[in-house]
Image 1 (cartoon, rainbow, N blue to C red):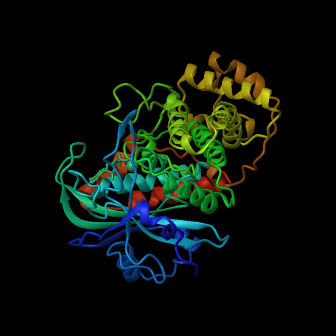
Image 2: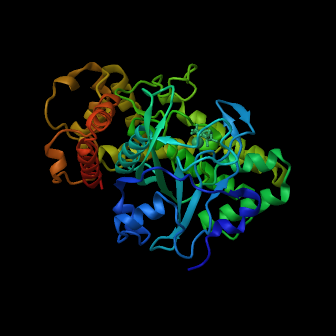
Length: 448
Ligand code: AMP
Ligand code: MG
């Protein structure tokens, strides 16, 4: 196999680090569906733990883990002191289609970028990331996957969890881990040659392009992130921390901390308790992500024609609107009828959901295929009148013969997240988590 591509840029992008030596390694979750994409599904549990709990290098892969260097805007304030402070890139493997996939960690120990942090992840944080990624994947969002979760037997102290709390190390799988903040760091340090090399690397590795034009990179990132923002809205998802160091140039959603699914369509709904101004509220996510992409273009401005960069940035709103229509219609399971008409349908859905405060997941479930199934009572609300007139013209795009459609909608609100966590915390009972993952995957199959 060809060497991991990160080695082309590691000299200025990463630092070799050593994983923490954990007192225990108890396997809690292995994602065999993700593992089968990179040929690792046949590992025994023992070998799995050796690689993803003890971080013994995979054969012919990175000889030592690499902590990536980056800066970023956090809540719009530039921070040059961040970087992989509790994670590293462990390995890169090709999938069947020849696409490189990264295995990156969270909670694997301290690095030169840990500052005052312990480099650890709480077990609850790991469980929450499993739930977020499984749900988002099922809802058609371009997300990292939770590949592995191993409990590590340490006691951690955190302000936002009853402490001491249990520790874990997680491995995530995603196409890439090059954040907007990686480019910002190089621009901040005025490392123009390295900025060029990283641009080349990103275009070649993630977009299969032979170009080294920063304008082309921004074009890809604008398209991907506009779509990501739209898919959060259709999923009813609030990421919570849309800082520029948490936005990947591949536009894969990742790094799930204080995320929540909005129970009802409330644009002001926030996820992070520390987001006092509502900067990353449900309805402001497109604006927040676009702002981050502007920082990418800003970082590349010394290498490119500024007017050309601005022209790419200006395409974000239109691409966002197109993607919003595509994602809403996909979730509803109806065929498009043309952008203008579809935009009005989406507006009518938003108006109905805001006006009625009906749970988002119930609405999409009850109206799957464009015809109301089940109880009409909630939909007699006047907020639905425009929607009902419009939806009558749409044709179903999905057969509803999957058993999922005969049951209840699968959702992921905070009460249920806590209810899944409680038996784990109280009596080490993991059955609710595994049952939920199965149910989410069942929904994913129904939405195919
Ligand atoms: P996040 O808010 O998770 O995106 O993290 C922002 C920055 O803080 C990154 O540089 C992280 O690596 C770092 N960080 C977060 N938690 C810890 C921790 N427990 N130990 C060390 N670094 C951390
Ligand atoms: Mg982060």
